[in-house]
Image (cartoon, rainbow, N blue to C red; front, side, top):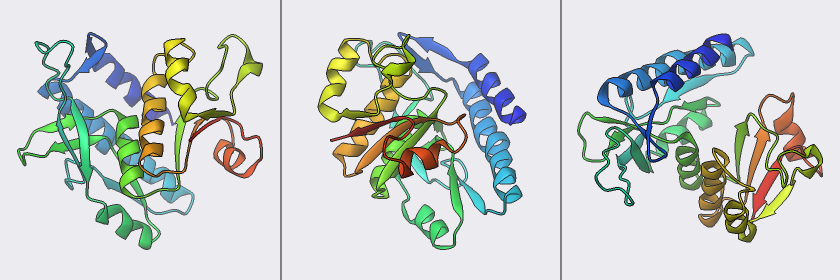
Length: 227
């Protein structure tokens, strides 16, 4: 939706990076939480209700659902990423209870510190999704992206790789076949696979019916990453 797109663009304007890592100060963290939870979260609930579904929000601010530790930068210990966190735990009972009632949990990657203090942490959404999938023992983890999947040659549309084995990933990153924003997604996929999630997928969320086509057709429309 236009409101969600505008909200995400505003978040992008707030972003500050040091040595390739996002920095989030307390003032920006307030903006992040309001945007992801209040603006985007409630907008998505409206969409779900508009098609006859039921959804509810989960996050670290209102429910303590997602918990994190402060993220450091080992290669540059002098850098303070401030309110950037690494997710370490979820309250798995909360989404399971929702699913029992046929309610879809909408989870914003905003976490509360494990020390119980009021500080909130900005979490990488891919990393949070991987942790949630692992903790809930999900059969599949699917990332909706703005690209069709992973290309062996980004300039060749015919080079879309429908299946990648876990053992190929390290070499593909070293060879820059997997680069930029695709690296955290693929890393999240590998982490999920190593903790019991059977299959992970990266597909284009803008393609109509992409989720159905990826899961229920032989060739799929994106990239699956498996053991």
